[in-house]
Structures are given as structure tokens and as C-alpha cells.
Image 1 (cartoon, rainbow, N blue to C red):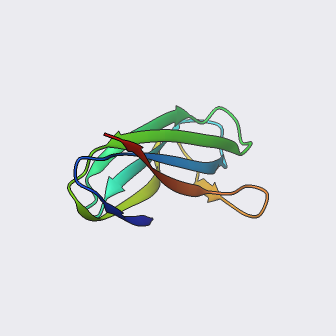
Image 2 (image 1 turned 120 degrees about the vertical axis):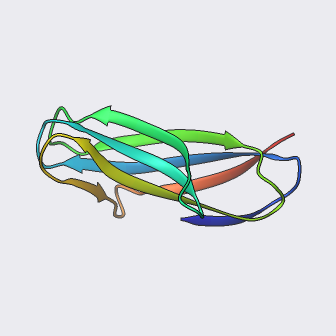
Image 3 (image 1 turned 180 degrees about the vertical axis):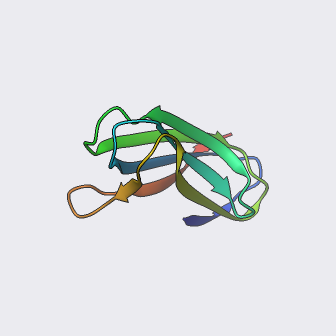
Length: 103
């Protein structure tokens, strides 16, 4: 998760990067950006065609109300069998970046 102070009338780009590893090559997964109340803001869905870790990057742009803002990322299986893992370490970083991109 990430928390930042938003300024009224400003647009913010939220970029998510993570490594997803499926233990079985079937089904699909979803990665979502949610707010502090768990309301979905952006969703990325992809098929699990291989058991090799893959890099996932997606972006959400918004103009939130002024004040303290929290955004979280969730990973969930969207179909098929097996387990999904979020993998991160020194060579496979996972992050959420918030950038002020103007008005």
C-alpha cells in the first residue's frame, strides 16, 4: 500500500509493478488497485498460460479529493486451479509509484 497527501485539483498517476507466478498453467489472475475502503479503482486481468513468473505493470490516473489518500494493490485468482504468488526480492522489485502529473 501507499499513502500520500493529495492537493485539490491535481491529477495523480499510480503505477504498479509486480511479478506474478502461477503454479499451474491455466485460468487467469487479476491485480487490482483499491482505495482505503477496498473499492476497486483499476483492474488488470491476464491469462495464466505458463508457470514462469511474469512482470505485470499497469497504471491508474485520478483526481482525488484533497487530503490523505491510501491506495492498495491486491492479487487474486480469477479462474482455473492452483495457486498464484506475488514474488518480489532484490532482482524482482514490486512497487507502487504515485506521481503528480498536473492539472
